[in-house]
Length: 206
Image 1: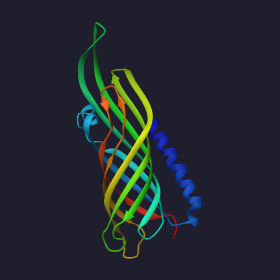
Image 2: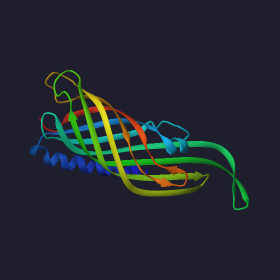
Image 3: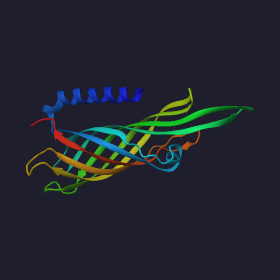
Image 4: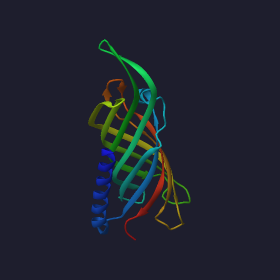
């Protein structure tokens, strides 16, 4: 919940800033729904559960008809609830339902290059580099072991953009990426995960 509030506040701030500066350049906004596929120790932590709870907001400034640069803010929530089990700790035993939760919020400076700036289907590649706000939580019933950390993040991606019309600057896009997210705490050694994204893009000025 705390991360959702931070994500909303950042998105609102970016929208306000972009709206004020839209007359100074060719700005586009992208709104993406994202699905996270955990890898490595993150997959072990959430028992391979796919995260269906994710999203991105991206603001891109066109440098040319092919290249653009901007800011991407995303969020992905990974979660697994295990059956009740007996925990052995410090010579005493207790029964608890264990719930594992990790929420990541990458904030990335993003570059994008359109491989085919014209046509009905326009492939592109992208790279984002920046930071990642992590919220780790492991619940033992009503007790929780938690940690928050800000670390490095990078995301290469590839996808296609389909404009709504021949001369339309708005359209639909589908992409896949991979999030590199170093993080080490307890049983987790890295929060790397693949991401599939689908969304809409449209200009902030006509």
